[in-house]
Image (cartoon, rainbow, N blue to C red; front, side, top):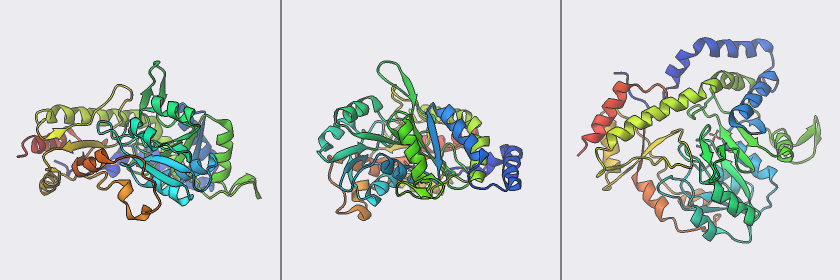
Length: 375
Ligand SMILES: *Cc1c(COP(=O)(O)O)cnc(C)c1O
């Protein structure tokens, strides 16, 4: 059996080596390494894939969140609601702009922001919500949009983990995660479902005015070369990364399918131990692209189980071990949005198993056998 790893990007590369090498070599030979046709082509393909009217590439997913917050024009002191159980990037972008992060508890079934608790967190200063579509599933966007409209809030989706997942509205309309709010932020960090070979990101929007602003902010606030309308930053997707993404984007749906198949195999095997595991819930409102396969381990056994699996050659990860409201960097900066009961419980019980496009059946059996027979 091949050694089990959390992510196997090198083997995935071997399968498309010829295409990737040709695309990279073409960029190097062209002499155009920043901007240009390769990047424009990727932007057009990403818009077509997601269904967003505009896709603006940038340097990484964290920049995408920051640029989105800059583009909607929030003022220092404005409050932004974020989920308490998430990656730090949204909280960081909010705090860097002197806005106030308001962490709100999540729904333990979906790991996404608890809509009912958003209502308790609203104040007169609330100006935006950043739902983070965690682990591969879109947040419950219909009620979030309703709250946003009623209270004149912007909605910026952190879609770093869930590109390709599809949300179904109560009326049956379907839209991809990241294209539903005012702006969606995407990351192409190598381990993401659509990853490049370095850093990369993009912003998605259907709003022309916002698209122009985003474009301008990502490029030093320039309306045209050397004329600076607003204070911006330098955040570009380079041509080599765009070339890699142009090769990989057409495979994204097959990557998603292979992740879904692995998740099904895990679900099926682990159903034998309801006493010990709660497998991830896939709710009807959103498809699941399984950026992570995250279990809840019962009976306080998570840490022991993780050690045991490690000894047996199975790596696992804890996403995330601490709530955002407890991170020392944000002490004194956040405002308390809601209770954090579920987040605190999740931080103690979650365990993410290996899931990637190169995981084979033998490895899956090995992992599930260990889990099912664990005492
Ligand atoms: C990866 C990630 C980001 C940041 O993306 P980078 O490209 O690494 O800056 C933001 N939010 C979430 C939820 C992520 O998983």
